[in-house]
Image 1 (cartoon, rainbow, N blue to C red):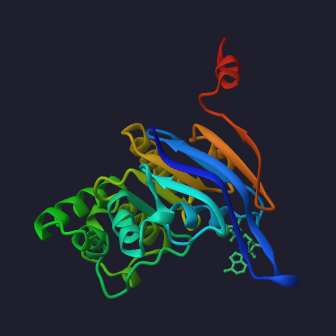
Image 2: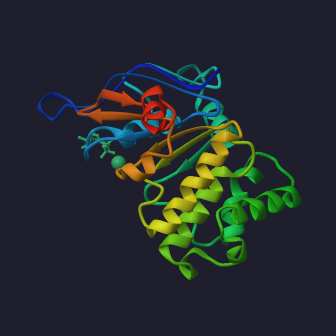
Length: 238
Ligand code: ADP
Ligand code: MG
C-alpha cells in the first residue's frame, strides 16, 4: 500500500516572464517500509516536492494522497491534523522552537494532537534516545551544537506513529559518523513500516535507500534501485 502517492503533480511559481515550473507532472509513490532518496542539482525542485508531499504547499495541478487521504480535498484543519498525526518533517533549517527544551520540542506535535503529557514525555525521551541525544532532553536549542539540534529535529519528526517521514537534507550539519547514525535510524524506521522520502546530495547516504529518484528542472529524469534492485544483487553475488 502506498503511504504517499503523487499523480502528475505540478507546482508553478510567479507568472509571465517570472514564471518558474518548480515541479512538472511528477508521479511518485512511496510504499510502507520503503525508503526513497531524492537527488538533483540546486533548484531542481527537491524541496518543492517535499513541501507538497507534506501538505505544507498546494500543487498548481495534480493529486497527492497520504494514507489514501486526498490532500486537495481536506480543508486546512484536516491537513494540519493529518500532518500532526501521520507526517514527520525534518526541515532544511530545522525550525526548532528556541524557548522550548529538546524534550518539549519533540513533545509538542504529540501534545497538539491530544496525547497525555506523561505519554508525550515518555515518547519524546525514547525518540531522543533513538537518535543518540537522550541526555540533552532538558537543554534549549541554543545550548546545543548544530549537529545536536539536527538530531532533535529528527527525533521530533519520528515521535509517535508517523507513517510518512519527509527529510530535507537531514544530514546537512552533521559530521560523517553522525550522518551515518541518522541514516541507520531512518532505515530502521522504514524497516519498521514507515515510508520515508529524503532529499540528499550525498550518494553514500542515498545508498541507504531502496530507490533513488533524480530530479532536474522539476522533472523526474531517472530512478534507480541501488540497494535492493536485481542489478545490485547480481553485482554483489560472488
Ligand atoms: P531544490 O530544493 O532542488 O534546490 P526548490 O524546490 O527549492 O529546489 O526550488 C525549485 C525552483 O522553484 C527553483 O527555481 C526555485 O527558485 C523556485 N522556487 C521555489 N520556491 C519558490 C517561491 N516561493 N517563489 C518563487 N520561486 C520559487
Ligand atoms: Mg532544497
